[in-house]
Image 1 (cartoon, rainbow, N blue to C red):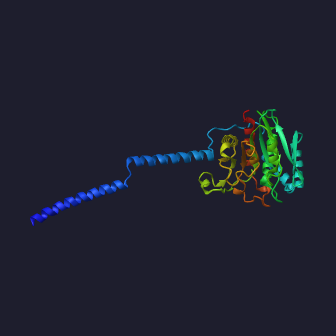
Image 2: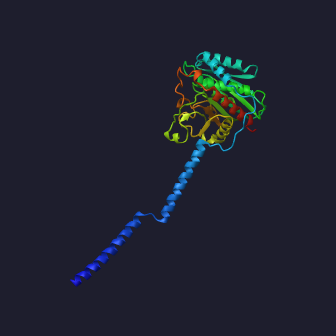
Image 3: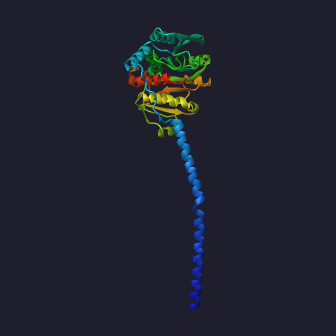
Length: 339
């Protein structure tokens, strides 16, 4: 009996040591060492920094206050009257309708010197109207809006709103001191291939920046997005205007956004590749093709407005008070762009 007990004790000690060694070996295989932990933490920091930088580039947070507009203020009632009058002319989707609209725009601009830029398309003659303000500088900025519509629709938001805003901008900039030449361009045939803006962009020289005013009046609607991930970055209620540009348009987008915000406009922005649906869908892309820095100011069209390209796109659906704040912001930006 005594010898068996001694053997049992020796066997127990051997098995205990073996078990502990196996546990130590197994635990070492599963648990990461300090070096591995440092690598994982470094990767997490790198990914976090990359995502933060991407958010800054895409969303463009504004840290500096932009310029406040000190001149004559945009008038919401006048903006509403302009939209209603333009819509009342009838459809602006053919040569005759666009000609009526161009004549009406000339009348609203009064005695200002206006350049008519005529071109032929589909066997018809169409017109851009261009107003030049400020000193005769070599460089210039362009702010444009199209006055045509898609189909036989009223086109209040798309794009009587942009046309009215451009007319009101011409009024509030009258007599103000501008640092450089500003061209206000009323384009034909945006809906049919960006034809008018393409003619203007091709003929223009020394354009420092271009803004396209594309649908400015639809607010307080559910906001849709081209990609679901953008819901994490932007409010899902469309109570803001958006400044849209490519990654290389970052400085322009930031400056316009700051000016709009400083003048009471709720505003967001996005700088992203133009392959995202909708980013290139206005007259600013005609200037992109000419190597000009350009951006679009928009309520995001079909991503927000349920009446887009329908008979329900009528003047009573627009927010003219918000549009007036947008015009004030545009005036502030146009008057402070350095030479």
